[in-house]
Amino acid sequence: MTPPDAERRTMSEKSDNPKNILAETKVNLALLPAAGIIHGAHACMDGASRYGPYNWREKKIALMAYASAAQRHIQSWIDGEDIDPSGAHHFGHAIAGLAIALDAMECNTAIDDRPKRGCAADVLRRISGQLKDKAGV
Image (tube, rainbow, N blue to C red; front, side):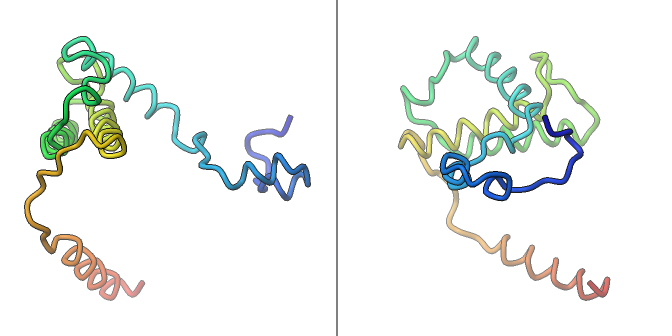
């Protein structure tokens, strides 16, 4: 077995086995850190006990409610509270809510209630460019 700190190589560099080569064309689910999966699942357990598991597949959900909830959990964490009163980590709730929103979008059970497209992404890119220029990057 290869030690975790050994030089990383692609599967095709390690082996010419067709299964290994084909694996490189698949989404590598192992890249999502387990801690995020675990905390997200813990938060989903709280939601399932209150609203029922996979409730967003039964009835459509408004995406802005989930985006807003994720922002509230992140803000609570920024403000110094790690654990939500439910007992789950605030980041776990944010992960769970955003994963649910993505699932609803993929399953066509999402209501896209965002406001008209704004310019925030363009403003962020412009200001980031200015900061890079100022830093000489």
